[in-house]
Amino acid sequence: MLGLQSYASSSDSDASDNEQNPNAEQTLHLQPLDKTHSLSKSLAIVAAPDVVPMGAAAVERSLDPTLKEVAYNPRYEEMYAPVLGPEHPNLTMQQRAPRNTLAGYVEKAHINAFEFENQRRTFHTYGYALDPTVDATADGQSYVGDLQSAYDDNGKTVFEAPKPKKLRKQDKNDNPEDVEGFLGPWGRFENEITVAKPNEQERAELDELLSKRHKRGRIPEDKPLEEKSTLHIKDAYDYQGRSYLHAPHDLGVNLRSNAPPPKCFLPKAHIHTWTGHNKGISSIRWFPKTAHLLLSGSMDCRVKLWEVYGDRRCVRTFSGHRQAIKDIAWNNKGTHFLSASYDRYIKLWDAETGDVVSRFTTRKMPFCVKFHPDNSKQHLFVAGTSDKKIICWDTRSGDIVQEYDRHLGSVSTITFVDDNRRFVTTSDDKSMRIWEWDIPVDMKYIADPTMHSMPAVTLAPNGKWMACQSLDNKIVIFSALNRFKMNRKKTFTGHMVSGYACQLDFSPDMSYLVSGDGDGKCYIWDWKTTKMYKKWQAHEGVCISALWHPHEASKLVTAGWDGQIKYWD
Image 1: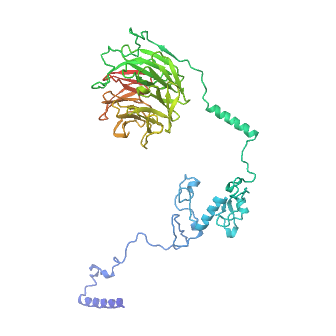
Image 2 (image 1 turned 30 degrees about the vertical axis):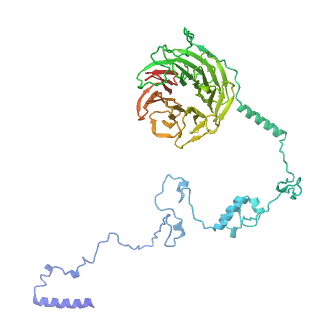
Image 3 (image 1 turned 180 degrees about the vertical axis):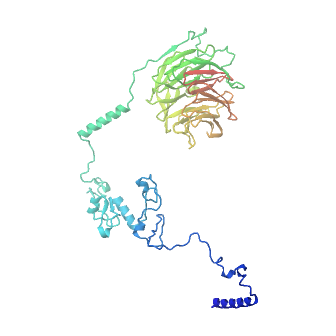
């Protein structure tokens, strides 16, 4: 209606316009178009118009396999259609299989919690349970596990009537008045055999097994080895009848002084090499107090005694072990020394005559030996062995007088502290134990998760500190007094000793710390600042030991697995 109304009104206005302007039709094409009749506002360009298919072409819907819910009922063909999209050509069948966990495809199964627990306990108790993959209402009951027991018990669970226990008949006498025949709950069962004797066949098998085991564990007794020593110098005694063990006086150095040099210096040059061992050196020791002689134990089964002053000759060679020497130790006077070897023997030698005084063994390998430092107890020495024990022997009788058996690994070092009233041991069990002398229970046990095995320990000249070579390529310092606490501010690093028991030492004035390492280098650190002052290549193989001369300000000796002992100044 509105359109007709507007149509009428417009025609009236057009008639009046024609009357007013008779030439309007001629100029009509020059006039602008009326915007009410234009389609420019009502039409728009659509890039993707909705197109209704004219034919009966079926457009299949695809289901995303990761969907949890579907808003319509898909047909069977849609649900089991292949996954839409390109397929990886190189996947195996196992990789192509759908899965929602790392191991496969897991679907939630709704089961009664009580029923699940019931079947689980039944399976652990009786050995059978209902088969969860079988529908009991349609297919009947089926079991997994011990089927015979399941059918014998009619599938009873633990929550039903329990199985009747088959009790053996037992002799009973509960009468308390019968003192002699009272049995109580301890009566015998019927047909009970109290003594189990093997029959002849079992006895033969047991005897064979025991003989094999005994033969395997037995250490073969070797024939006694010839113990000898060779003197390499002609002038073993001087004009006064004094042997080479007597310290000389004409050296310009007071070897009998108890005071250290006033100030020590870093060695700068290699001044001498002692050669004579065929294999690597395992241990070196200065002669007690004077240090005018040097004792060395080697892997060639021999111990050698060397001059430090004069011509620096090899004085004597001691041969008497079958296997490599592990450790050596002087007594206080320097008249005798101990040698511990991998042949499981510890031998006491006379340093002047070269004779073996006595032999000690527990059929276990000794890893370290040490005389008691007191002059009144020079007949006692301790040895750490491979069977985790520290054993104390009396050299006069040859008997074991004490055993310290608390470590969990073979014992590596023994160090006497606190005026020789106590001693400290380290072991392969990565612990340190402190013992009172002659008391076989450790008074202190030091073990920390950060600690490593410490196969070499040296006491400082002032007796207040212990420097321990730790196998994590560090030298750690422990207090040698009451608390035996680790000094975490003093740790010396920079060398590589992992796997090697490199012996370390202090300078006599305690200003430097010296150690070898696994690459054959020798390192010197400042004691106060822990800074590394010097390192140099000392040996071809491992530099297993480094000792500072107690009376010389700048002289130290190193020993290596190349069989050489070198003197530095």
